[in-house]
Image (cartoon, rainbow, N blue to C red; front, side, top):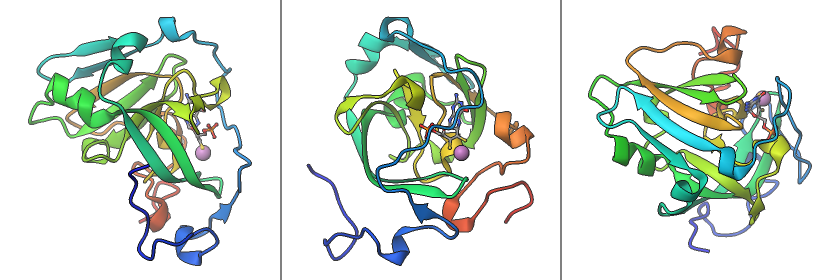
Length: 203
Ligand SMILES: Nc1nc2c(c(=O)[nH]1)N[C@H]1C(S)=C(S)[C@@H](COP(=O)(O)O)O[C@H]1N2
Ligand SMILES: [Mo]
């Protein structure tokens, strides 16, 4: 697989520089954290809309999203509840690909990710561009399980995992920041695990 690993090329698992402060390695035990009732969404009933401050709002069905150039993430994920899972592989499409189609307007600076369940989370637009964010439908080469957000979730692995909205259905580009579900309940607006941005008021 054409992936770039950390310098040295050897296995990094277990190396202390692998885990952000306050995190532990959960191994292959992937916890499920869902605030709402878990929906069951058939792929043919799923779609993603990108709208708000864009030139050409667009909606992709499951089939249309799969016809876009694919993209794979290989690396780590970090949950604010202190587990990290190392060397994960997720496949889908880069958010850059969707944004290229819709054309963000110059005043677009933030994004609200909406789920069909009502869950929301806000992100700076800059955290969704430059190959840092994906819509994913595969984990470890298999369809993403429903409890982990299948058929399709957002993946923003450089931020705490509450930003990776499960059952994502809409990305709304906005001029000003607005708090999503957990952000209204005390979690940080950005959530960088390396800066330990867990709660509102953290650096
Ligand atoms: N729709 C939705 N997305 C969500 C959540 C949620 O409750 N609902 N929880 C968030 C949180 S807090 C985390 S840590 C991860 C958990 O994803 P997982 O259940 O696949 O581990 O999903 C995030 N995305
Ligand atoms: Mo979380």
